[in-house]
Amino acid sequence: MFSHNTELFVILTFVSGSAALYCLSCTDSVSPRHCHTVRKCSEGEVCFTESHTSENGAVVYDTGCATSQTCRTKRAHHDKIKSLHGVDPHYHHSQCMECCSSHLCNNQGCGQPGYPMTRGPACFDCQQVSDPMLCDKIKVCEINQVCYLQKEMEFGDVLFASSCINKHACTSDVDIFGKRNLQSCSRCCLADLCNNECGDLAFPSSTSTSSLASTTTVTPSTTQAPRSMGSRGREFFTLFMKNYRALRNLTVYITTNNETTVKILTSPHLNANIQSVFNFTSNFKLDLPLNLDCEYFTVEPKGLILQTSELSSVTIFDSFYLTSNDGTLIIPTQKLSNKYIVSSTDPHYTDSDYYSQFAIGALYNRTNVEIIFKFKHNTPLTIQGKSYRDGDIFTVMLERFDTLQIAHTTDLSGSFITSTKPIAVFSGNRCQDLKDGCSHMVTQLPPTTEIDTQYIIPPFYHNAGTLIQVLSENRSSITSSVGSSVSNFHLNEKGYKNIEVTSNVTTVIESDHPVLVTAFGMGIPYHPYVTVVPGVHQYLDYYKIIVPAGYEENFICVIVSSQSLNSLRINGFSVSHYTSVYQSALTLTKHFSIRTFKVQSGTFVLSTTDASQFGLFVYGHRHADGYGFAGNFVHP
Image (cartoon, rainbow, N blue to C red; front, top):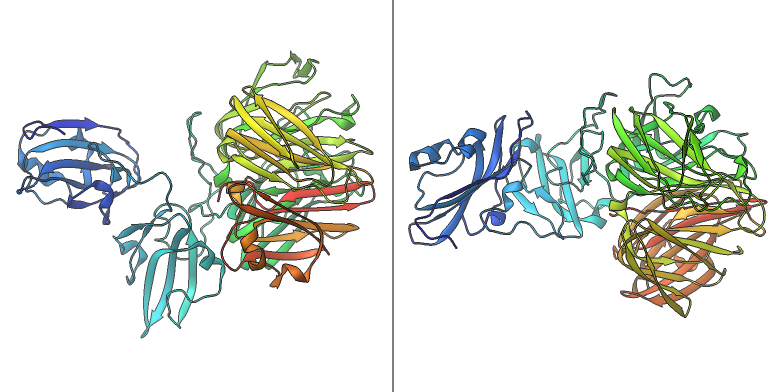
């Protein structure tokens, strides 16, 4: 504690941008984080926190907006406090002043702790305003809550209500605010202060203005107001890696709960005929031309950005060839970041048809990408006339929508990719023979900011086994439980380990540091496929997915807490309605039940009536082919 006659003024950071900040604005709070009033600052102002002693001798805290000049100037006279907007000029014995320049950043300062690390979003909290932008009260939600905004009509007047709300209520048809005459705007969102705009989604221009430092872990979306729940979002970046054969269209599946407008953004340099705007309700299948698949070692403008007016989920199937195909979930752009570790397998044969490969797509102009290669066999790789070996670094600059695909005749797993701005990364094999026969394998990769420490990997039913790959950005100690067999191993930085298991056991991976886990379905009689495994902390309480047509058999596998198994609903039916072909149970942080159901093709909505979260895998087989993807593999 400072003595009462001490003055200390600390400047944390300043910005010169024109974007107005939202700052906490209270007088005589017992701590900055207990202030529940916000003020939208004037252009060029920053947030401040100041501690002082009140008239009764207690240390209290004032917060609000201030000019940068005020923050830079050590104030010697109390009358200068009048330049601090929203604070009464009655200071006694000022002790500390700190300034900062991001929304709600003055929830801490002057030695006081800020919001807890584990929390829900900070939401606007007004039960009745004529314009949501007029709300000046906030509330920090619980971990299982999100922000909510509702437009209402009462006595002919338009009113808005905002608050925190349980995540599960966002997917229900319950009239949350108890009003009977509701207007079209009703939405939930996850980001701090996201619930003060109500209206149609505003699509941004195709010109990116984002600029991120290479060390950032914040992942902005190119939409105006990013909102997502795990894999559900309003903007997605996709590309298509090269397949063994390409006889049919590239396919995109989109699901949503409401009538939705989709806009497809492409590079002006792309030579392809693609419909740019369309509308649908519930689900949609979009076929794209084959010439969108990426060539090797060439920068091409082949990336696509899909923007949806409602929360949606997206999966793609990469070159729908009858005996060489795979699918992957596409994660929203606000979940993308700038660090990735590659997962693939060692090619069965050393020719181009079996390449280990990965592809990178840029969301922003002037994105610098660095690749640290890791080769299982130190066979040189030639790119643009230069030879690269294991441990060598390749750099390239990409513009918005640019793609670059890298391939090798040896396993590229463990190669590490960094960038100065968020990118999308996909990996797999052009075609691979893991047990019997070759098939294409592809998955989008989550950034290392979106990986977990605990994983449950069920077996792929009616298959020869599962190849599990564990990859780590940092040195990690890992416990692997395969059935009743437990083993421990260590991974060095950028290291990985393959674990092959039989077709009837469930595997658990636990690590002291976050790791990426992928699973490869091993053929006989069906050829291989790959999916990222969702971490236990990445499970959701709601999914809407499409099981594609054209396969002899399809399966949905769920991992749910045993006490919530009876609350699981699949298209409105309890699990007893479906044919279970595999089941097991295990105890991790709690008791889990694993169930695999055989299903037909079509649209499936999976949820729990008690809002408990669960994991989801979707996969299927046909002669000499298979596909697989997860329902989610990023944090909620």
